[in-house]
Length: 176
Image 1 (spheres, rainbow, N blue to C red):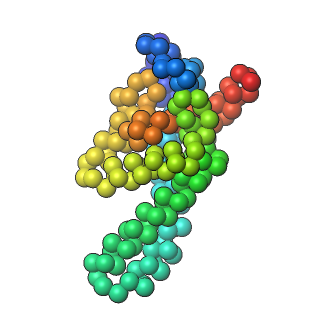
Image 2: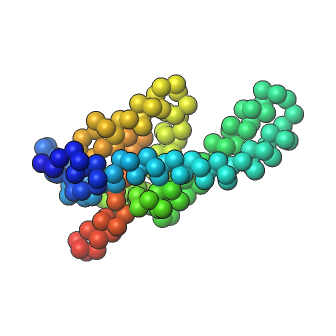
């Protein structure tokens, strides 16, 4: 069994003890390292902040009342996230941050790109869990104890997995 260091650096995952359910993607894949995944998420959040700022500004300018403006602004920002991320994941398997850092999101069952609805459910789960005090932190940390694939709750719920883009492409090409 590889050491924790080997798994953290994105080396091949050992086969799980029990046999995976029928149709589930086989073991031996190369996971994206946790630090790279976190850095990709931070980069995605920075890109989202830049892209959503004009939309949020426009919505809050148009909305006249105080509390309603804040809610409308947060709703607009969330809507930008829920449009951009699922589109990028379903079309390319990565968002800008994930692509820049070599992370790809795949379906757990077969290793293909998630469809739009699966990517949307992943991102809805992520946003929902993030807004609940402390639950968002537990979601982000859950990859530390999830075995053997080190998935966060939003990946477990959506049936997705974060893999190393280059190693995954090479494996897919070798398998056929």
